[in-house]
Image (spheres, rainbow, N blue to C red):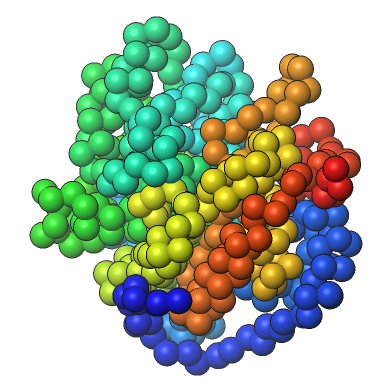
Length: 465
Ligand SMILES: *Cc1c(COP(=O)(O)O)cnc(C)c1O
């Protein structure tokens, strides 16, 4: 097998190691059966390469670890807060930057101030907790992603974009006053980590401004998005990553962010408000104090704020981003050589493999993505996440299994954690499963499920026919 694909070498060396062990195939078969074929029940130590998520699984740098020691744990006005705030203001250009303990906490603090019962929120695509917080605020969440996102084989540069015509049609139909918020998710996680162009953000902001609608950015992967903009949007090729970030954020009123992704830390989140004189500042502070903690720590320790202040800069370093996106491109190029179908072109934080293409004989309600995930674990101890009909769940009204647009298995890549050799193990395992795929007659069935968010807890078994 040729590994012709170019790999961008790591712009770091390794100072500390964490041992991971490989179980035998027999042991893995036993472990996954004991876990009811649900990877959330596996013990992490029984996994060799853990690609379940890139959230909070990052390796911190020597600079971040040494910053931890500087943590000022004062309840109010800690030195660490001012470092965090200065980094946030500098990078995003906003007047108001407040810490919270993770992304969904930022959503909880802000969305209840923007949305009320009976209203709507429109996004390119809502991430699942983001959708949940829209619904908890009494509103309904509507996705308006560009149609290109729905075909894994169309190689368009910005498959994360908002369909602006769809947004305008919704405003015309529902009335601008019924829309409490427009939300741009960058990169578009649920569409496969696909980027959003600067031009698209500008157009969406224009529509929002015209109709007086609040624009929020869900900023979890803002740095990866800026890197794609620089690579793929001709008007931006001479801008620095930071200039692109400033420009993207200048169009929005607020942002909510999980720092567990592009800020390269293990915990943390941010609320940003562009205009410091907005009454949202006082109201979001009040929410932060009730839900998270005082506004200068927001549910984090001072040391966490230090690590974020350093990580925000490491995460926007162009050399780092070229290596980071390079890992995805390497995996994708290997899959291209072997005709493994994935959401293409590859996104920012993982490769979304099309399990329906690998197992065309297995219907959506026998969960091809779960079959592929189970086989990859048995093959090489790799853990990944199904993003398809299994995760989507049942229709709340009829109780019938819903059919997802995609049957993906997501291989999410933690930042600075795995080397090229690990990626090669993933490729070998994928090919071995692909070779055996035609022999599978049936998929999996659910033997027990809880009423909501079932994918975290359900039990499954293989259908023996
Ligand atoms: C991870 C994520 C969130 C939620 O953040 P947590 O830190 O997991 O609470 C929200 N939106 C997007 C796009 C995300 O990727």
